[in-house]
Image (cartoon, rainbow, N blue to C red):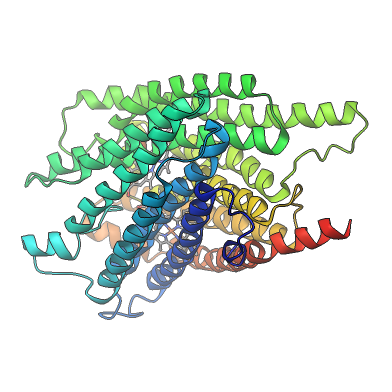
Length: 482
Ligand code: HEM
Ligand code: HEM
Ligand SMILES: [Fe+2]
């Protein structure tokens, strides 16, 4: 991927070139995210590790902010990638889009350097403007916040203007409408109130309404597009599913927001609202799961009927990641989310390692997977091959990363279970109970396993980068020889 972008083979589409630029930065930030995660995981075991040099709070902060930013990069890349295919016209204003990319990347670099070297500031307005806004997942200082809004407006204009000029497929219509909601929600995380309950109230509008509503719809459109491209799925079928999912995702996801309002000082009616609607959230995730596997199975069946071996997918690694997405979204968001979403359960699990278990599997399963799949589609296009087959490296990457994240999830679930039993149920959830629970063997062993599985994930990541860089050229040579 890194080399293919330097060649001019796909000068045909500047929108797709821009997509590759976004993918490239995304994968670098993904690597940074994992390194920070490893530092934070070691600090659970050796609390003095890098103490006062690079504290846990800083490593954790960079870990989860890098996560959000690489995903947004890969999402923007994916939109630029599909834009011309879906609309059937040349992308509008891509030159300005490229400029916006450089501005954004320069800003992200400055923000990351400040996070790493300056880390924290005094409790003043100046810190909010120049160092860190202090809101979990969205810690960019205010100057960067405003810059991000400008860049996103440019991006949105590219997409909207191209959409208006070209054909209006169902996929693109959902994409354009959903992107407006997704970008608009960011504004809810840009202002401060002194009242912490009110602050959290709005902050969740970004976090929850992103990952459980707008981002889910977003990956629904990506899956629809990818299935058409890779296995030649019928547009009418995937689009029909997409509309159903949009309806269900917004139906449950929006009021499902209530599951974050149980204990932050909001009125008690949120208990019932949160319980009911968030418990319904797994339904659309099951539908998405069925959708991908149904289409995939149907195409396989059609191929078998024609006497073909069934390998109808023209991009092996991409389809493997997309099928993993269907499983991962269902498990991480649907099952692990449902576990703790009722207030009766959440009163015990709230903020334990169980939450972290769910956070890891959900972000990975629902988003990392499909975005990696889109990167493989980028590589296929950039190297101009009709067929991109999985290599040994592709298989090692998907196996080690998925196994590693699943392993971390299981370890954290065990740690969370122990916290619920000891810290919350037995010792009543006080200050001392918090520490006692973390000194017991189940907790410590679980943290050791999480770190080991984190290393496994990281090795998988190295295979992934290696594969993305080499697979295109390899496929091209093979195709030329055939
Ligand atoms: C892909 C979709 C999802 C992602 C990426 C995701 C991610 C996360 C993350 C990172 C947190 C921790 C937030 C924090 O730092 O406080 C969280 C909390 C939570 N999630 Fe999800 N989630 C998803 C879907 C769901 C679904 C579908 C449900 C319910 C069915 C759910 C239920 C919850 C609950 C109840 C909490 C609060 C945990 C606590 O009280 O500590 N999530 N989610
Ligand atoms: C090398 C692999 C990784 C390691 C060692 C690691 C480690 C960690 C650690 C130590 C924390 C802080 C947990 C806490 O505050 O209790 C954390 C938080 C988090 N990580 Fe990772 N991580 C890794 C990979 C990932 C991946 C692949 C994703 C998602 C795609 C991810 C998403 C998150 C999220 C969402 C949180 C916040 C969870 C919460 O607030 O509940 N991490 N990670
Ligand atoms: Fe939520």
